[in-house]
Amino acid sequence: MLETDQAWAFFEKLEDSYFRQKEQQPVAIPQTLPEALRLAAELAEQKQLLEQKAHQLNQQLVAAASKVDFADRVSVAKGILIGNFAKVVGLKQNALFAWLRENGILIASGGRKNVPFQQYINAGYFTVKEVVLDDEDGYQIRLTPQLTGKGQQWLTRKLLDAGLLKPVAAE
Image 1 (cartoon, rainbow, N blue to C red):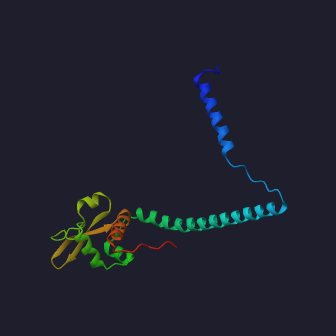
Image 2 (cartoon, rainbow, N blue to C red; image 1 turned 60 degrees about the vertical axis):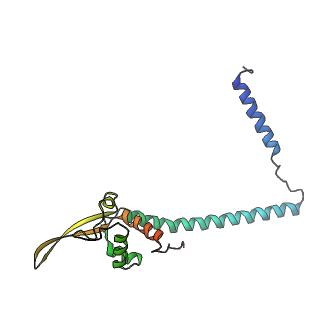
Image 3 (cartoon, rainbow, N blue to C red; image 1 turned 45 degrees about the horizontal axis):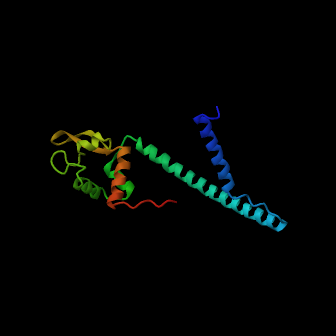
């Protein structure tokens, strides 16, 4: 049994671990009272710094949790009108519609002007609602695009990349 490959592999691992422990520096044990006090003070200071860092990270986590919760709620929301989205992010409605048309996201002319191209609807970024209007010419059907929650996140990233929005500074 001692001459099997398995036995030799075990022996090599044992030998490696033995020499690895020998190479590691031994723990410095204070020899005098002043050395022990210095070591205790250093360890207490390190502990305090680690506790402060942990507290700071915990506060960041709590702050981020509310933002993550909001983003999760937005991502599953049914939709928001593009004009309302523009107000929320601090853009003018007409400027946002123009940018969306210029960038090939919304149809630029004709009876379907400002309706998203089908690929963006299929991607889940937009929905289109049919609204029936009663005017002097009779009933008309208007198509009203809405951004989905997923679309709000997607469009926010596109607007940030285009430089139209500034990133929100981490608090």
